[in-house]
Length: 122
Image 1 (tube, helix red, strand yellow):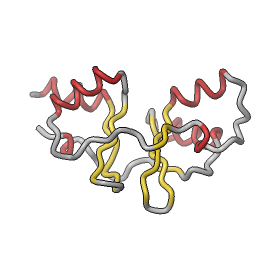
Image 2 (image 1 turned 120 degrees about the vertical axis):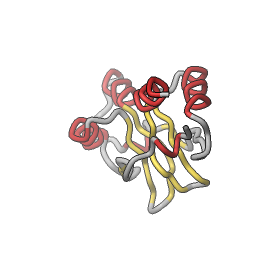
Image 3 (image 1 turned 120 degrees about the horizontal axis):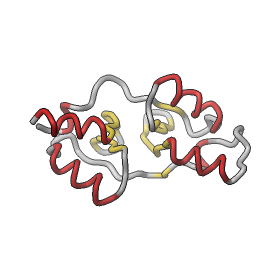
Image 4 (image 1 turned 180 degrees about the horizontal axis):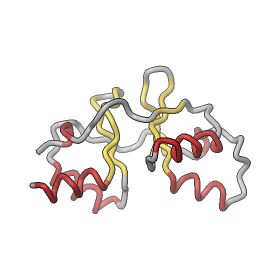
C-alpha cells in the first residue's frame, strides 16, 4: 500500500498570518494534530500541537502568527512511498505527521495513526 491511499480529502490549512490561538482552535475543532500552512496556493510549512505547546510554554502571545512557530519548508514524501517506508521515516525522524506532496503541491498530511492502522490491516 502507498501513502497516497491514506490521504483523504482536503488537508486542514491555515495561512502564515493565522494566530497561534486561532490555529489551536482549528486543531481542537477538527480533531487533528497538525495544520498545513499555505501561502496562496504554496505549501510553506506545518504547525503542530507540539509547536503550540512549546510556544505557550515560552509565554508567547496567542496573537502571534503561526509563521513564527511553524516548521518552515518541512520534509515531505511523494505519494508513491510505501506505508512501510513511511513508518520507517516517522520512526527515524521522530515526526508524527507526514506531509505528502508533489513539489509545492500538498496532497495531504498523514499522521502516525494512519500509518499504524494501515500496517495493522496489511
